[in-house]
Length: 408
Image (cartoon, rainbow, N blue to C red; front, side, top):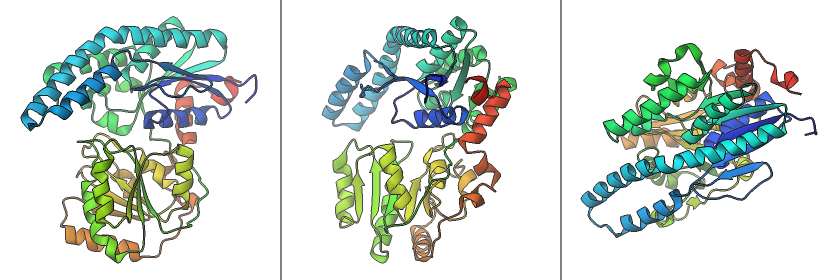
């Protein structure tokens, strides 16, 4: 980077989130040599880095601690469900009293950065929703600066299982943001499952998760890796653990799960049952993780329980060109768009008989696997569309701008 490098304001959640990683990949596709000013909102304060701006949430941490403390004291499931319902409704309403301050603070930071730099681009994800609200307010106050909204999460669909009133509030906010956006960039899953976006189809652009890249890989061990996160009622490992415990005696491999661990004791049972051949490890940096995945023998991915979200790891894993074991939960799984085309994958359905899945998995382990050539992957149109370069071309075409030349 030089003194004349263009500047990008990226408004999103923390650097550990998939939202940030997707948005960062798009920025790098648009402008390889740029300065990224990361304005982020997080549940907890993270280490400050140069050009990072942390916007604190004045209620969240205290609220979360109280919630976990009281929930741990309740022993009757019925009371737990009542408390959880009340907690989410009351605290989400209380959020409205602090959101104005959060948005005001975020907008002040964005405006201060814009005033310092002439060549600047503003990009925001929709998680958290504050980011999109700040983007729209900034576009009104700074009309000469280009603002790009990225809808990576199905915001409205999160409220399907709550109640009509809260879902109506989310729908109203989403429509308001869509109506004020010049362009709406979203993933196919977000578009297909969201009736609000379809109302604004004339200014909508669909793009794929731009995580496929040409990574140098080699197989140095027999380790099998999973890396990601488990979320109750969204992505759960029970089916994977149950099947892996059955095949372990017949395979020569160690299986490592790397994820954010909230309740480590729950998973120590799995380690003990597997004689420590299934290992549970806390999350590591993205750079360190990429190195481990590039050297392992095989990868594991676990699908979501719903059909309107797809784990970003589905696309990211393809870059490693390794054999993939995929545990499928939902019949209408959006991940199959990729895995039906990937040449070396073992798809295991939770609805199938466990003996059939076991036989299928053992057969996959017994096969000889070769590293796939990146050039062969790029011959598949969906995979080519899932690169940062391709998505950057889509955005450049929409705005009739070559960012690499026009902003330098």
